[in-house]
Length: 255
Length: 270
Image 1 (tube, rainbow over the protein chains, first blue to last red):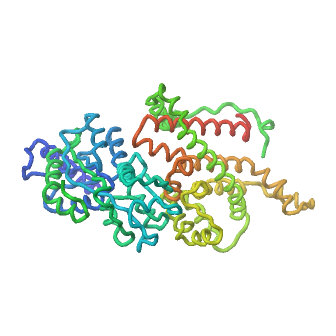
Image 2 (cartoon, rainbow over the protein chains, first blue to last red; image 1 turned 180 degrees about the horizontal axis):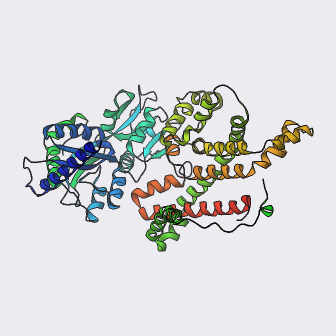
């Protein structure tokens, strides 16, 4: 037992050391190792999880761990001292908050785009075909809270369509909107195309025409306090190259 | 049930140093985060935040929902506690474990369970909607229900413990003197367990006031309708951390005032 503990501690020490070496090695060197933590918007959950696995496969000895949450919540956490290496936001204003707080290591890069879609229950029982239908009385509509990017985007789209919606609830993140519709508690919600795709057969999407739609830009950046910038940089360049194909499979478009 | 007046005067116990040190560390563990909150409070803008209609709406809703949840918990939970303490029937321990399960269940899971039971497509929610037109999700009633679900176990186990440790000879005496079962319950049992009843109610209320996960999952979040203080704090944290701190402070002051006030009133000032 003690021997095993010692071995584990030794392994941790080696990992920590090699992590330190990785930091000093030039970017793109083959000696990538160690662990990075990526803070990513909820809507990236499925795409990033798949991408993390692929990245680890092509870079043995590395580990990418994710913390998913509302972009604004993640920004608060980073501002309060949460330790991580990379931040991927679902919108520019939240990224700007980190830049203003001088917590980023370099300029962010937009790596993906997303669009909104109306999410309805399986079989579209309320026959919703466009944004105007969401204003119908008697319909239970849930949206993201105005503070969350998906809530702000939804408000923009509804404003373009000239529709007033009285939501039953303002959810804390986009996945909560999705689950309310998937559980049948709400008739409709406004989420990202990628969420509808990730939810599978439990829900259906109703397209919002480009003229009324909103383009969500996803910027990514290395955090100032990153302890493994080499690996963080390698992960970001992976996202911008091979990762795009994976993200496209989840409904994201390239910038 | 010895009264304090009859107790022998005792020398104050001398505290072993390790206990004092550990107790100090325990107290510091609770107090330091509160100091952190106080130090970060933007006092100048605090009053503005306090007066805003959103904060007042959330505070009003929180008080309404937490006191309603406590009232429901008293009506349903005390009979439940009595049943567990006094009756023996097969499956009692299983039933008892099930009713206190919300204490260990992640509240969000509790909220999903409530949706699966009382939601539109839930086990009995669909029937409630078609037969009585009762909709619980996204309503204040739903928020009260979520709080009751999470908070009632605290009352049940406190009252049950009180009933178990009670001297039943008082009840026996009342019965031999000809008191009926209701009279015994109202005039003997409940007055005797009053301290646990009060402690249980206070615990239940405090838990209901701070409830977050089950409420946001089952009742959603809408200002004035289901957005209680903890939900308002959570959402404010994302956009306006200063407002979130002020809101938390309001919640702290209100709960401290109620807890201290009730303590003096119910347990006798100590």
